[in-house]
Structure formats: C-alpha cells, structure tokens
Length: 305
Picture (cartoon, helix red, strand yellow):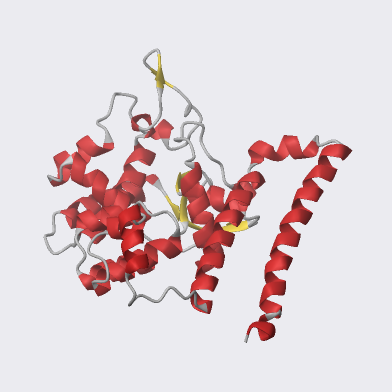
C-alpha cells in the first residue's frame, strides 16, 4: 500500500544515513522505480528502509510503497527466516537476502542493539513504539544472535548481507545464472554505479574478464604503451564508444549536482544574496554552453563524412 511520505515517523535512535548509499538508491529508483517497499508499523513508524525513504524524499516523491506489519508478525517472520537459513539448498545470494531481512527485523525488535548508549542508558527511542515493547536488558548483537541461531559466522553474515544489499537485481540474476562465486560477488557489490556494476557482471559471466579487479583497475603505463605499439589494435573512437563515455561523464556530473538537493544546503540556498545568485546562474550558463558546443559538433557531422 502507498503511504504519504510526510506521515511516516522515523525514530531518533536509527543509524545515520549513508550518503553514498542514498545517492546510489536515487540513481536506481530514477531508472527502475522502488523495487522493495519500506516496512512500517500500523502507527506508520519506520521499521526498515531508511535509505530508500530518504532517496524517495530527495527525488521529490509524495507517496511511497509500504509493507505494514505488527510486532507479533515480525517475530513470526524472524522464526521463519531462522528455519529457512538452516536449509542447505539456499544459495549464498538467497541466504544474504534472508539475513538482510533478519537484520532489519532483529534491530527493529531490539533497537538498543543498533543505537548508542550514554552513561549506560539507552538513548533515543523512549517514544519508539517498537522499543517500548522489548526488554531493556542488554541484548546480543545481530551478528552474535544470528551465529547462535543459524551457525553462520559473523564474518560470513556480513559478507552475505553486503552482497544482498548492494548488488542490483539484474546483477544478482547474472551472478546466479553464471555461477559467480561469493568473493567475486562481494567485489561487484563495491561498484556503486548501477551501469558499471552490470557491465562488470556481464564481462565476468562471459569470461571477458577473470576478476573484478580487471574491470576497475586502470591499465598501467606499460600496458598502455604496449597497446599503442600493437599495430593490430584499432584505436579509432566509434560513435558507440563516444556515447558510452559521454553518458558516463554526464551521469557522474549529475550525481555530483544532486548532492545539493540535500536538506543540509536548504538554508544556504534560501540566504543567497543577489550577487551570489548571479554567480550560480553564470556557472549554470557555462555548463549549458559547454554541452551546446558538444551538440554542435554532432550537428556538423556531415562536414566530416
């Protein structure tokens, strides 16, 4: 069901938003929409999906798809996940998705395991509907509790969660179908740009590259010199190469600009002087002029044929 974003309450004790994660999610949501609904209580208190919620806010969305649950339902789901994790037929990606959901539920039921303490007292969730229902005694961390319940070591828990959280859905399908191992999947998950992550996965699956390092590491000077000396190599820039490079440069530029939509800068924009506003407009005009110049090169293509 869809809920108005302004009606969703976020408790004070939640972990801080990871800026890079939010930016990556914004790119993904722009491209394919919100794939996984956030989870809230019946009182519209956020349980899981803080980064997805923040990304949707910054994109100017008014409503967001939500899954509404209650505490009894969460405990039942937690027990079901623990049972699923003991099944040997689950691959490591499916395990990671189960573990990621387990983490969301466990930390919602036991928010003191993710929040900070001051002077030994739990801070920040006194008015949290979820926190009020759980014991104030010190709980095991998520990793400790998971290891005890499932036998999966904390190190493997974290690796599998990273894969499940950071791989794009289409990349997960490639990884599953091609039988790419968890070590390479972890490396893929560290590539934050969705298009580049997909490209690296496709090249791994086809055998074009042997490891993610071959994709992300720039060529050494000796490799570049060797390529130049190789008379068999064609160094002509094709239109497809130009489009790919220009698209990547534009995407990187737009991603950098989107940072300034953050609420952190709202006050600064509101207090700009007329002179400062003129300078911002001048910079924007320079950017527009630069892109117009590139477009004019394309329009003059007939003169180069």
